[in-house]
Structure formats: structure tokens, C-alpha cells
Image (cartoon, rainbow, N blue to C red; front, side, top):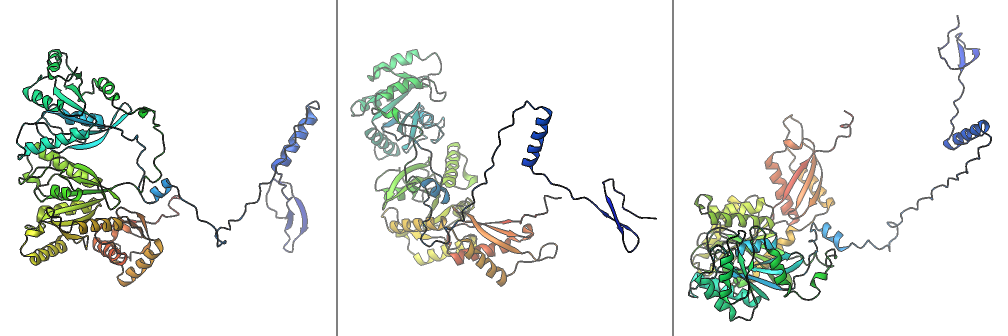
Length: 555
């Protein structure tokens, strides 16, 4: 009986094999290209319908051969020039959005608790100044960029005017208000539309009329309908018709816009909103430098010494500064934004509502800063509260510099430095070699040295390391001290390492069983990176990542 494989396909029987089986030859399958198939279909269509015209023949041209990239083989090729935007993103510094340049200055003045800070926040577009029902919350004058329906200007928030001696705190606040009026192109005098014209308003109006700065009278808190009598009484101040507004609810700002338009330079509104940023915007970005510490450690005195003028209020009593006040400054051709902050006490001692707002602003300033200077008192070097502040700065990823103020009055200087080194070694082991400078904000002793350390630690904070040296170091570090066994009693392998970010330096290590690597070994790696590549005084972040499994998608 002949044996053959069952198949429905047509087959041809060949001669029998040695074992008696018939050899079967299958016909070869013909493969037809798409062009040939289209031609055959067209031919069949013409046979069925001879009157149909043939379709035009499409000639498919072959794609041009790809030229090899010989840039790497030519020794004289020019590298690609990066644009300013590409350079900014390469340095992890995004360009700020293009803004119109402010062309004039507006100062907001008035007696306490008339809504000056509320109007300031309304013009700026965000909550920058502290606002509270208690009068006298604002003490230092604050500057920012205001925008009112496309009208861009510099706006200054001032302290409430009070008739007091110049030697008192209220007298210093009044002097700051007078400087703001002298600096401004126009001043907005605010009165309370609910309370009416007070005797202090009349006294302040008499002083403002003597100045050369134009004055615009504004009646705030006029969101109701019972302020007509107040508006009529305001004519007695001799400053013209008052503008009724409500800074809290944003009402009446159209009147304020028309009043400020007369002080804007011609052609200011013709500026293009979509204009590109300046060519070196990323490089001209100011260094964000925050000054923090406990109350009464000399932070405001240090800033006054740095900028060379009495910009901040100072006094012997603690808690003089309440707001976080930014000051634009230039040191040896480098633009810097100094931020004076309120002193931070222990959390259990902070019970006042205004102090809670001040402390909250201080921590927000630390988040936005690049370098933080922790000012400590030489008489009590690094107590528990200051160590808590230092750890918070490191946890936020900011660069830290410690300034020991009032060093000129310390008698046992050697003992104070030994105490400082011991507390840093015991309590700040996660960051070694934090820059420490002994200064005197009152006399200016070693203030220049402090700024040199700030620039140095800022450069280290922005440092980027190449991948090849990092992996050579990783191989040597794991060979000298191999990783411990995992929970499954298997050796953890560290395969690859690269730096993914600066500000602060952040590294990623690809490892098997990344979750089993203990914290002690992570500190060993961080300290090794810091000692080998010179990343002293800045926080280092290391993230472990598990390599991608190529078969994971198939499951």
C-alpha cells in the first residue's frame, strides 16, 4: 500500500523511494509584487470593459541613497553652536517669560491699615506682601513689578505712616516711606472709604503736598454703596477727586488705570507681548541669595552692610523684620537678589498669627533660593534651632553657607570654632565641609570672604560630571567595598551610573534589587562622590533604578 502525506494541494507523484514511499513534488508558490498585481488587475478590467481608458502609469522613483555622516571622520568639522534657549536648558536654567520693561515707579502710601499691601498684591498679581487685620504689619518697603491691563510699572509697598520720633521704630518706618515717595514718579495716597478721613490722613496729606512727587488720592474699601459721604469729605485733603476702588475685590481698577496712564512714557503700550527674551537672559539671571537665622542675629545689619545703605530696618529688639524683602544688588559685576527673612524661633514658641505668616514666608524663600546663608550668633553657635534650619536647607537641596556674626565681640574665638566644628561633625554628617565664615555685619569684617564662599559653593552646586569618570569611580568603589547581600541572600550589582541633574547634583544608579540596598551603603556612595569629585558643602541626591526587563512586555 502506498503511503503519502495527505494534502489538498495539487501534487505530482514521482518515482518510489528506496523504502517504497512515493516522493511528492509540490509546485513552487509564485510571489507577485504590488505593481505587477495592479497591472494584472488593470488588464482584466480592460478585458471586461474595453471602452475604459487606461490609467496613467505611475513611475516609482527610488529614494536617494543616504549619504554617510563623515563629520566624525573629518578633523576640521565645526561643532554645532547652541542657541541661548538650548544653552539655558542644558544648564537646567529655564529662561524667564518675556515681560515688558517697567518704565515708571508707583509708591503706595497711607496711614496704617488702609489696604496698601492688599492693593500691592492686586497690582503684582500674587500674594507677596503679608496681609492681616492688625495695623502696622508692614515695616520695610517692598518692590515688585506691577501690571494693570498691560500697563507695567514698578510698585512699592510702604509701611503705614505714623507721626513719631526718628529714633523710634515708627520713625524709621516713616523715613522708609519718605524714601519711597522720593524715588517714585507718582504716589498713591490711600484712605479708608469706610472709616472716612482721619486726622492722621490730613497730617500726612500736608506733608505729601510739599514733595515734588505727583499724588493721586485713592479711597479703598469702597465695595459698598455707603461711601458717598466719605468721598465728599476727601476733597478737603486738597488732592483732587478721590478714586473709589476695592483692592480686595478688584473693583474700580479702571479708574486707577486711567489715572496712571498719564504718567506712562509715550509708546509704552506699543511693546510687543510676544517679543523674544534678551539674548543673554539665562546668563544675566541674578543669583538668588537668602539670608536666614534666628531672631536678632544680625541678618538685616548684614544686608545693609553688603548693599551699602540703610535699606532694612534694624533694632535691638528681636523680630523687627516680618516680610521676606528682596533687594536687587550687583557685586563685582554679578547680579544678585538678596532676600532678607524674618527670624525663625522654635515651633512651640510661635503662637502669634503674624509671626506664623512670617515664618511661612521664610520657608517659601528657602525653596526659591539657590544659596542660603545661615547667620548664627557667635555667643551661641549652632543651637538646636539653627541645626534644624540647616537640615531643612539641605533637605530642600539648597547650597548652604554658615556665617558666624558678631565675631568682633567674641573673647574665646578658638573655643567657639571648636564647638562649631564638633556640632557640624555630629549633627550634619550628611553634608561634609560646609563653608563657614566668621564675619561682623556691623563693621564689615570678612564680608568679602563671605561672598567669595557664596560664589564658590554656587559653582559647585551647578557642577556637572561626565558619565565615564563616574562609572570608573563606581567600579573602584564597589570593588573596594562590595554591596551587601539582598534579602534573598543574593549579591546586589551596581551596573551603571550617570548624573541626570544639577542644582543640586543628582545621580541615578542602575542596580539589580535596588530596593534592598541599605541606607549606610548609600551614604558611603555619597561621601565617595563628594570626596572624589570635590562636591563639598552641597547636598547630593542618589536615586536607584532597576534596569528594564526586555521580556516584561511579553508577559
